[in-house]
Amino acid sequence: MEPASADGGGGDLSRQLKRYGPLGLLAIIIVVVVVVVIASSGGDDDTVTDDESNVDVGDPDGPTDPDDPVDPVDPDAPLSTDGSSGPRLDVNGRELLDGVVPLSWAVEQGVESQYEWGDRCDQDRGTVAVPDAFAVECVALFDDDNGGATHQGVTEDTITIAWFQAQEEDPILRYVTSAIVNDDTNAQEEATVRGLISYFETYYETYGRKVELVVVPASGNIADVSAAVADAKFIVEDVKPFMVWGGPLLTNAYAQELHANGIPCFSCQVGVNFDYYEEFPGLAYAVGKGGEQLDLLIAEYVAKRLAGDPAIHAGDESMHGTERVFGRVWTTTGEGSERANERFEANLGALGVEITESQSYVLDPATLQESVTSIVTKLKEAGVTSVIVSTDPIGPRDLTFEATAQNYFPEWIVTGSVLVDTTAFARSYDQAQWKNAFGISNLSTRIVQSEGGIFSIYEWFHGERPPADDTIGVLSPDPQTFYSFLQAVGPELNVENFNHAAFSGLPTARGVTSPSLSWGSEGIWPDDLEPDYRGVDDVSEIWWDADQPGINEIEDEGLGMYFWVDGGVRYKPTEIPEGPPKAFVAEGAVDIYPERPADEQYPGTYEPLTPAS
Image 1 (cartoon, rainbow, N blue to C red):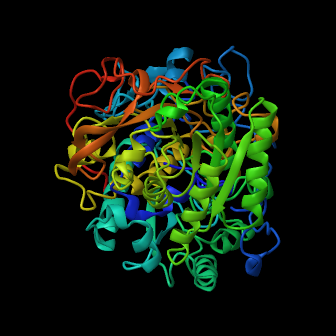
Image 2: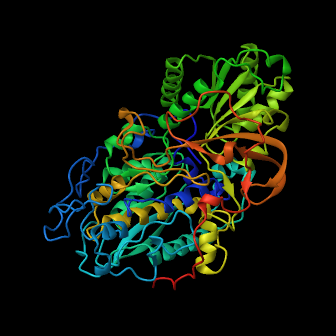
Image 3: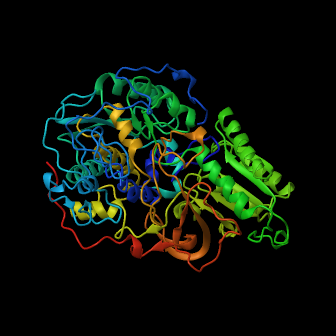
């Protein structure tokens, strides 16, 4: 999924590449975001990439510091968990906003019988009654005054959401996604998003409001700055939504315009570092991790699992007795990328690891072949045995074929950079090279569509495949995250309370088929990366088997599959174990689960409810 290049971003990249939708890479997030227990409480640059749209931060509706206290709850509300009066606390000691009643809190207070839970709730299990091992906790039905127009884009009955949709035929997208073209149309994608909204509003508490989705078709390609600004201004001036989902891929002009006008969004900012989230507190959210976060995990993996040992997985046997010599290849988009690379090398240096040869390139079809020829030549001449790949998904294709042409067969260290760790793309690389690929992935262990993830839930709920059956995985994270947060906001929906809800949740449950997410959680990342507006916190260890048959993320049969070490166990920062990697060790490794793992089963069966009107 996600964060990718050394530009310090990429966490939103895979969300924006709608033509990557077929990739189950987003299915990881899907199962995951459902887990968000908030309701249950149980770039390129440090600033912006587009100078043309540098604007000051506005404050039309008072975006607030996430550390500021929220309004106190009604003093007549039920007591806190310790029996005292004042703000209600959930079973984990976190403050509940007024009107939010999770089942666990009601049970703790002994007052569950005082609330209505409805057919959507499995009270024995404690979660919504859906066939998902990671279903969210039940929240009591709300039947009271919700305050009406509590914020821009909010009325007593509706929440206006602007949903950005890329052009049907975008030449830049077509080039980048050439390995995984699918036939989903914009109309099918819109129908699928609306179908997802129907599902969430049937099972999640929305406090009397329904989402009014306004589709905003892109007026230009994903790199068109002028079009991006125009689209954002249309949203600000004409749509006036509470929130925006999505945006153009290769410019931050769109996000800046929205955020400067106090409009929050999911996945509209691209390639931004932590400083951007600090500049626009409570307005920018991402599901994937940021570039700085991924860089820390890559450095930890290299230092703990690879450094100081011989390059035994290189294709050139003469390297097997040689201590690893590291090189790095990364995609650049400007000065911010250079600084991000320097930061990464400094992280490694602090752990006693040196990058002998560092090479970058610009993703430009006109110059890519010339670039990779020079890059491979320099890596080979420098004696690099192990190439750390922090690139877009296109680069490794040309790099690996050029390496074979130069009779150069090093180890290829996968880093979780955007979509390089997907089977669909990996099959497009030179297999004589990629059979020596291993490393870490942001993605969770795959599971067949019928057994897990949003695809199976959609099919169960609607009784048919999603119209956008290839791209549902990339369409679902934004609405799924939104409704998870919304449950914890309560009736008074505004930016401040939305941010409080996001930050009040504990990290999601951990499993091998889903990553762990958290927003605002302390203690996971270093202090200089807090508060955290990015979701995924962990990685898995993977390796590539060029001879393994199977289906890829777009359900194409073929040779070549990624395997997840130890069934897909995931690691947060500081948790990666010391010692040699388990690359190419078949015992315990899984390429795709044919059914849910034993500890990720859900009890019994459920009949879907009638969709909410």
